[in-house]
Image (tube, rainbow, N blue to C red; front, side):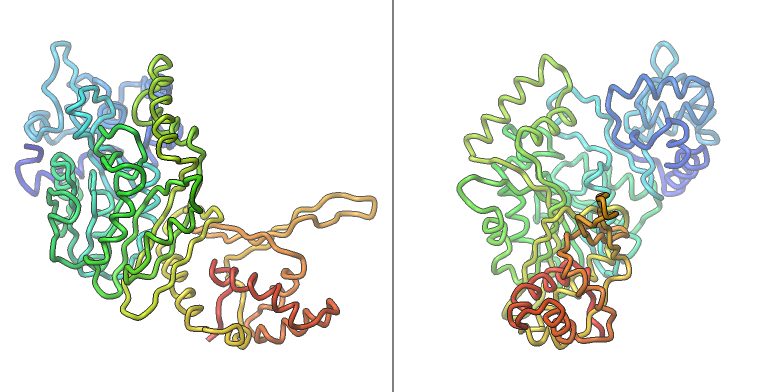
Length: 493
């Protein structure tokens, strides 16, 4: 059984690790970069060289972050005043080997304010691989940054893995339930909640909705096993369902767990098929769910790049093994007719009403930090746009550029001096995206200061161009609507 003997010992363990320097900034400095969060084997020699001085901090980084065998006497000094036996009895450390070294049975890394225990990425046994619990990766961290942090009564971390998203939610929720079909993930989620002093988080075992059937939540966060792989054998990665059907199933079924006004935020992969437009396919996922949907396409990959990325990060980097795995993945995609794969950040909100809106932002949104407020703002903008049920209503409103919007211009030098060849609006902040601009639309936006209705600006644009007002409206209004949808233009009260 994984765990210290009592609540106070859990808290003491966390204090010992943080006090010894197991915090992100200190590890960044010790190892020379932040790639240690998801390290590759090729980087280990450099990291070992960085830890060549036998300090207590280096002992803990080698032991818990890199999975190294470390002299047990150095480890005992680093973990004082707790004893080595306390960590061994808790199932965290293994008993010392005959050469006097000790290894950790868990990888423990700091992510923000949290200490996260997970499995070391050295499992070769297929049974162990099926139970493997990974440390939070880049996609999980992005979902944590995306969480809409409004006060909540209950939050569900669906497919919790090591429980990182549940810990994030504990900062704004009275109760958190973390569920996973992998019993080891449930055990580690429970361990991490106690290690971080989070008593309001409970962990339950079971497949999908089984552990919470009949319950409701204000927010569901989920980084499910979304990877489109030919042979499922990694629980944290593979759902066992062909293609992207598992992600579709979650979206179709999760509204039953949401309170009125409740959100679901999850990551997903969408398979692009040659025989059907991907937008049409995606729209069917959300039809008749009783939810509004805002979907960000964060990136898109051709299948060969997608396959190679997942093979080398989760299966093997052995040049003798990779070609065979790659061929297997590509043959599976050919059978399914998959040509590309998109990575999605899905945001659903349950809302009573006869109709619901569905919006896809497929222009490369980038999550660069905590952006839950920006996502909530986009919901409010799209709600407002839905209420403006005619072009006349949009034109009657006054609009202003978002304060984080920036105009970026590209110039070329000519005989007559610099000439603008490209205009682009960039949204700075933690939810970043951009939009290319026609020079005439740019002139229109300059007038969007919140003082004049859009109608007046379009009148002025038509006069300046010497064009019929109706023609200007036909061309410019769809662009303006698009900029409103993407958050570049905000309505005045």
